[in-house]
Length: 114
Length: 110
Image 1 (tube, rainbow over the protein chains, first blue to last red):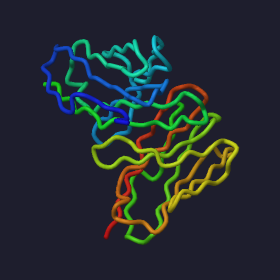
Image 2 (cartoon, rainbow over the protein chains, first blue to last red):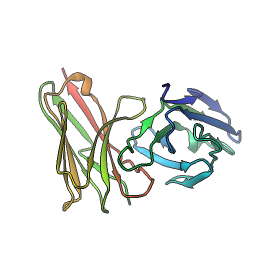
Image 3 (tube, chains in turn yellow, purple):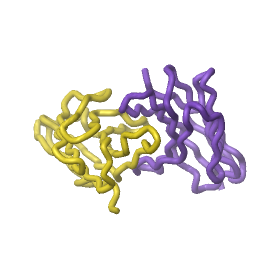
């Protein structure tokens, strides 16, 4: 299994540009989520999904959109990039069952918005 | 807030010593998980303790849970330089949201 994969690893955008961060998992996990981590800080939940077609907002959803058309993929869209969105973005997945709900994280995407 | 709050924020110890970090939370939980993050990388799951458990061991890790005090502790025994990382707790409150705190930055000096 490849686990959780994220692309790209690095990205530089100009203010106002849009882009999509890709996340995929091959473990048949129902639950997927996106976090951002600013320097020296913890992870803040952006959006999450408990299955295909079901998404919900986390702590910091503004400026981001998600969709979940398949179990495997959970892309994160930045609608109009702002310097405040400069961060490292992590995708994670897990089973939704309470007995197997440990999260697996991807390697992260480092985004800089100029 | 549903997040866990880790304490201390930073900890520096000598190799071979034990490291203890704490986590407090505010509302009742289904389980509580501890994760480690090496610099700039994704989090790695360490251990999960359920609300009806009081103590759990995994190798050099020992986790305790006190639901009456809404707190948990992670003990790393005989620490090594490779244990240098940030450690996060994630209380699971029965929703599908995993909310992380700001973590404890552990530095183990050789």
